Length: 248
Image (tube, rainbow, N blue to C red; front, side, top):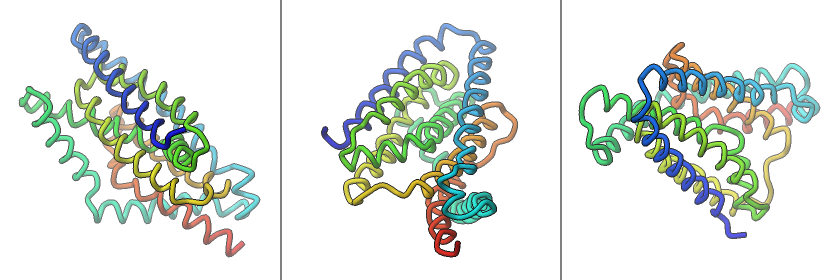
């Protein structure tokens, strides 16, 4: 198995799904596209909830105790939020979306620009913050197979169709984010001797689940949570878990 093939397939499914979604979306009324977005928001919330439940994982509680998992996730979110806000990750992602919109889209009106950026930001976060992104990419790099990324590719392809019907070509631009993030993680996997311990993976999955809750809130128009500013939490979660294991 060639390392990186899973990411290549994932990028292709996002581009294909986005193209089909744009072609379909132009034939759907705005109300229908809004309903589709709401449905995706609810589905994202369901996926987020199942991922966040990893905070109760036996692998995690056995290593750090019953009280520490919540503190690990809380600490990861606080430290990640501070780091991300200082680095202005959310505004940088939005700026990248605006730059791509001006290069890739012929529409320059403010409404279409906002639609492009929102589609790029939301789908970039959705496609790159889930546990399959990290675990699948690392396993692909380690030579353990790309089955997880193939599953993710199928899910992302169908999601791209629905999102592009609402947000347009901004969804296709998120393929660049998928390529950079998953490609980097695959390269990281090539340099690792083994995957993270189960407890560390559980803390990472729980933290990623909460980030997906923020994505679902954006889709449901509950609140514009700056999820990109919270992305460093995914780095802090396994670090704090290791600290908790050492203190346990």
